[in-house]
Amino acid sequence: MKKVALASAILASLAAGTVNAATVYQDDDKSLSIGGRAEARFNLSDANKGADGTDNAFKDKSRARINLKGKAKITDQITAFGKYEVELADGKKELSKVEIDEDTGELISTYKEADKVQTRYVYAGFDTQAGAFSYGKQDSAQVMLTDYTDILATFGGDGVDLVDGNKDKRENNFLYAGEFNNFTVSANYIAENNNDDKDSDSYGIAAQYAFPFGLSLGAGYVSGQDGVDVDANQYNLAASYEFNNFYAAATYASGEDGNTDLTGYELATAFKMNQFIAQAAYNFKQSEDGGVKTDKVDYFVLEGIYKFNKNLRTYAGYLFNQIDGEDDELQMGIRYDF
Image (cartoon, rainbow, N blue to C red; front, side, top):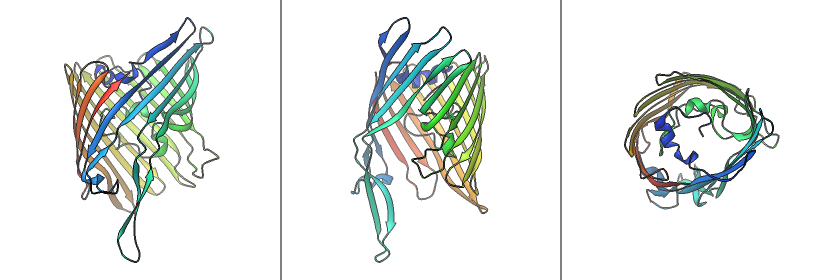
C-alpha cells in the first residue's frame, strides 16, 4: 500500500511484509521477487451475531496474500515494472442485506458467499527520471496522504475516504508518481468502465514534503463522479511527526457527494519499545444533508503489536464505538510475512 518510500522507521517496521519479499531471479537487467503473508485472525463483537446464521459473536477473518513484483531495464533512463497481488480467504457466507417482512414485521437476513480469491493489485508501467507512469488496479494519488494515519493492524482507515476516487485499489487507474529529494507528487485519473453501469470516473493530485527534522506535510484534491449525474469531490490535509521511536499523525478531509456535505478526520500515534509497538487511533466521519448531520464513523482504537522477528508478529486491538446502537469490537491475530 505504501507507494512512496517510508521515511519513518516505525512505519517501515509495520510494513515489513513489503520488504521481506524474496528475489527469485535477478541479473543486470531484470529481477523478479515474490512475497506475501499468512494471517490467522478473528473478531469478537455482538455485531457479528446473526452474520453466520447463528447467535455467535465470534467471526474468523483469516486471510493470505501473495504478490509478485518484477522490474526490467529498457534503457539507462527507463525501467519497466509490474505488480500482481492476490488475497485468499475462506469464502464463508457474509451478511448481504437485512429487510423487514411487510406481512410479519420480522427481519429477513440475506447472505452471500464471499469471494475466495480477490485481486488486490495488478498494474504495470515505466519508471523514468521524471517519475513513474503506470496503469491498472492500484492506489489513487491520495493514498500517500491517508497512509499517514492508516497504520493499525486491526482497524482504522475509515474516516477520510469520503468519495470513491480517494480510495486505494482503484481499477482503470492511470497514475503518475514522482519523488524529487524531499518532495513527492502524485496524480491519477480513473476512467469509467463501459462494463459498469456506475459512472465513477475521477481525477486527483496530491503532494507531500518531508522536512529533515521528522515533520511531513501533505495536501491533495480529488474530483469526479460517484454515480450517474452525482458529482463528488474532496480535499485532504495530512501531517505527521516522528521523533526516535514516537510517531504521530493527523489527516483531515472535507468534500461533497451530490447534495451531501462530508467531513472526516483521523488521528493516529505509535510508540515502539524494542519488539513491542503500542498504537492508538481515532476515526470520525460525518455527513450533512438538508441541514441534518449524521455521524457515520466515530470510534477509538487501542492496539498492541509484538514482533518476534522480521517475519512473525502477533497483535490485538480493541475498538470503542461511540455511535449509539453500534457495538465495540475486539480483534486479534498472528501474521507471518514471507
